[in-house]
Length: 112
Length: 109
Image 1 (cartoon, each protein chain N blue to C red):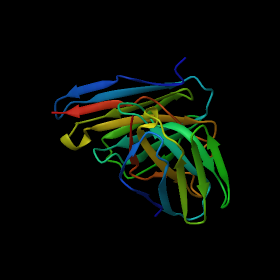
Image 2: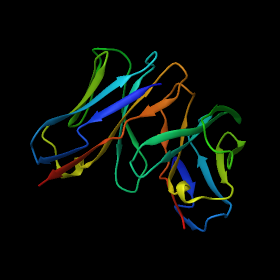
Image 3: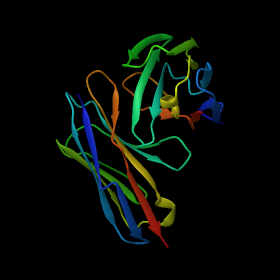
Image 4: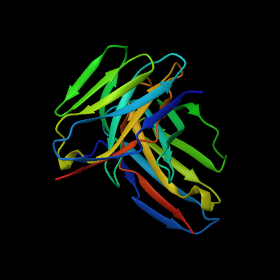
């Protein structure tokens, strides 16, 4: 059973489009995260939700908007995609904000 | 701001050749140091958490240690399946994880 899953795995799109990435976890965790991994392999936190409430909101363009319909799901919507948004986006979850984070397989976004 | 520096960037080992990876950090109130393994095209896989200086954790051929300024990941008698990128991260008082850039380990048979 996949613990943290993301869809789609690959996303190729044109500049200016709007796209969404979905994340689901079946671990019963109450905290979920979005990370961006750039070409230099640095993983940087973007957002975190605890029980559907936003608790971490890093300096990210407001074209990025997370949404948590319930504590098992955290989606990422990106408006007006730019070339610089090309990266791998990882979802993660943890039992609480202070516990170990478990990562999904990533979504590889390429903006042309 | 929390900082994590990993060295070396890349490490090529012969099978059976033991070595160590370094993770030095600056953090305001350490709430845990984490080691993850990342295979190409996959998400990071949790290995260890260390909380206080002097603590050690082991898993198969891997052993992680922690001091007040750095952590080491020792790989004993590595096998080709140990080839991966090893990521170090620290969590501070605000519970955010700050990652280093990773060390890519290649083990040749």
